[in-house]
Image (cartoon, rainbow, N blue to C red; front, top):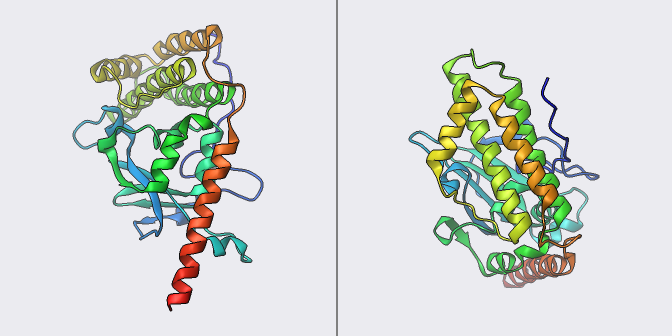
Length: 271
């Protein structure tokens, strides 16, 4: 049997609900609902296959963003809702503090939001621009390595579970999709690890689709790619620090809280 990929710690997924002690709890089905209006969106844009340049006719369009709850709601008895996950269209919005925790943990999908090409942003406020300006503060070598390789390994596990290629056309399509994202995660993660920059759009989308088809026919093909990137991460070198720089992140979040406290106070006086 071929050697199994190493296990890496997964950061929380973008749609996760956050219990008091952790950031990795799943979103229940009851939380997924048609799009609702969420106030105080600071930054939002198109992510996923459309952003990567891998979308084909019929592909879903995914959106990700972050919002700020009114500051006074943080002092009440009940914790405000930290994520809104909706369908039609598919959109995930995280509260500012939760997004920061996900990004500090190296979460690949959360991190995309502050590295998007300009034309993919749909909401971009001054506070959102400030967050883009401090995006490198969220990075550190171990968390980037663990998160990107962890997600890639998760994709490989899904491929392994699909068997030897003798399955339905729908399963083959899903297998090819997982393979494309395995390749993308490995490539983007290594670039971020070695250069400190994250390119969202892939250079050769056709190669990713071709790789997906090869893996759909024989899932074991993906293992050599995963092993190649594991070795590349091991060899480095990395430009990333050992720990993220939390000071500018904390300062940004406090500016968000002050802004929405002042706004609430102004509204109350005006009323």
